[in-house]
Image 1 (cartoon, rainbow, N blue to C red):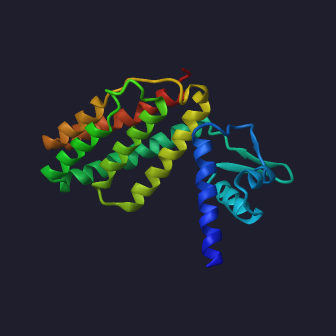
Image 2: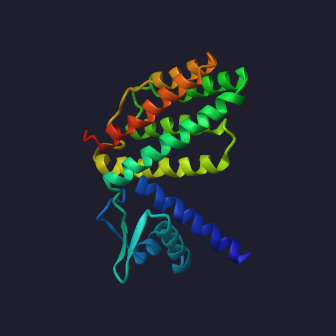
Length: 218
């Protein structure tokens, strides 16, 4: 029972630290130390250290012995590699999904996309829009029924989100943006027309456009 409680504490602390990294509260150059976290969460050192070690193992943080933990800065080469990886995996999975998707699946995807679309909400922030964008890509990928690809792309989206925040953190949470989901609806239209090739081309353009979005400075 005690082991389960400690594991649960570690998960809560892990999720909290990761959320603050993603949202830019912790930025590259900020030192995170165990003592401050123990005071912040009011727990023992063990779950704090376990959470920090896991974040280090996942490449979110880097440990500086006897000093603390720093947020890993994601460089331009890694961003480009991840976008290239996503194109290869997601386009391949879309072509596979197109062979098995039913009309009901396509309409489900359309309804999901419209419901998640942020275009009509004037208060939607860049971060909200980014999350909605990721939800579409993961939903589309889910129709390929390949959990391994899904998990890898989900992780990749998380890394790209951190990369975007690191370059534009001062805008998160304060700048609203009106962005539609026209590109995503185009992909769905091509799927409904049984044109997997055009759907794949549109998906590749959509993913590749992330490079300009992430590397731009607002």
